[in-house]
Amino acid sequence: MIEYLNGPQRREVVRWLLLGVFALALAGLFAILLVLSRAPVTGDWFPWIDFFRTALVVHVDQSVLIWFLAMAGVICSLTAASGRLFGDIAFWLSLAGTLGIAGAAFVGEGAPLMNNYIPVLQRPLFFVALALVGMGVVLRLVLLLPRLRPAAWFSPVSGERQVVAFTVAVAVFGALLAIIHTWIGMPPGLDGTAFYEYLFWGGGHLLQFAYTQMLLLAWLMLLRGSGTEIPFSPRLINGLLLLGLLPVLWALVIYAQYDPVSAEMRVAFTRLMQFGGGIPAVPVGLLVLYALFRGPALQGGAEQRPLRMALWFSLLLFGAGGILAILISGVNTVIPAHYHGSIVGVTLALMGLAYLLLPALGYEAVEGRLATLQPILYGSGQLLHIGGLALSGFMGIQRKTAGAAQGLESIPAKLAMGIMGIGGLLAVLGGILFVWIMLLAFYRGRRPVADQAPSTGKNSTR
Image 1: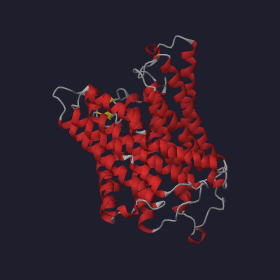
Image 2 (image 1 turned 135 degrees about the horizontal axis):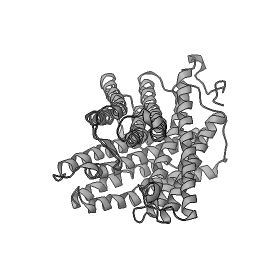
Image 3 (image 1 turned 45 degrees about the vertical axis):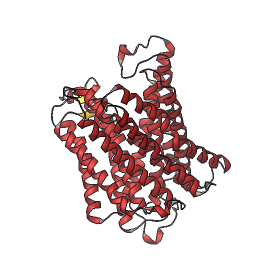
Image 4 (image 1 turned 90 degrees about the vertical axis):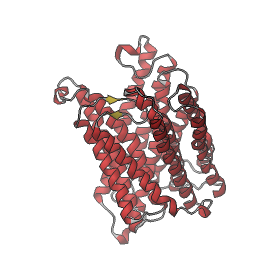
């Protein structure tokens, strides 16, 4: 496992982890609300215009953007504690923004827009809240930079965290600069979905590279936490992690070549996503797989089984998402199949990392049937979900369509979308189970100081 944390560093890790779990809980709540808003009777409870898409915007931003950025805060805090005053400001800004994005669903009348990467509600509160989240996360990353020690980057374990924290910071700063650059270059008259699609296109891709770096660190930590050492030099591993800077730096070439609001820029970032994200992920993933197959398949105790399951399903989903990215052709459901695979691969790895951190933070390790079932349920559900989407896309079903517009005329197409729906339901249940397990662990509180050793399992999640 990882070393026991205490003092200011533990405090920071706990609160950023709580923020991430809270964002997922809000995402689950809004998933329930968007279903109720479409139901025949309960739909009357929602007088807001188009509350379904409003709830969907909040659900996506909480479950993807804020969850991931909160876990970036966790990784920063694992790497080095920040100063008390500015560290507090960074966290409270992010928390206020998280609450504001949720509250914006009920305040104001601006339309929800389902643009890629960061869908928006055209309401003042939403944009203020989004800015607060951005300011909080950027401040936390800025506080990290002076505490990085490049001389330790090729040392075991701590070097991995330093390299990943640095590359995540560079990618997030790059995303912010890309958004500002695009906003300055936005032509007059462009508004609505097209405006935000261009605004967040480049920056959204750069955020994906930051998330990939977090995924790779989680893989390595889960591998060790589940009882297997990676049989390679830290210099090799950390050197591969540094390759995560290459797609971020290539974004400079794209912006030097193309107008930020142009079809050429969009295509260039799509190609960068298809091939650039695998630069560090493929070799690191292959080394992790080698270590897994080299060691016993399920070695370790009860508290290591959820970690191993999260690692395996994360590898499967992220790999499937990467393969589907290469197969994208046209505007069909292969595209959401790709990003659901990749994003959920990251999410599962970070869920496993959350489990791994609990004993180091003084809480009981999660173990037992439910804890082992959670990554299996979430991962297998998402595999069915993206499988159904991919099969539908290969049959020509277009993305962002619903009802009769989907063209589900053949039995194979209907079966594929049915598989997608069943998988999505299983994945939702798996996500709710993760939030429940984490909240239960926090509710039970820290173990007595004299008991801060590996869990005895007396409070296992069964």
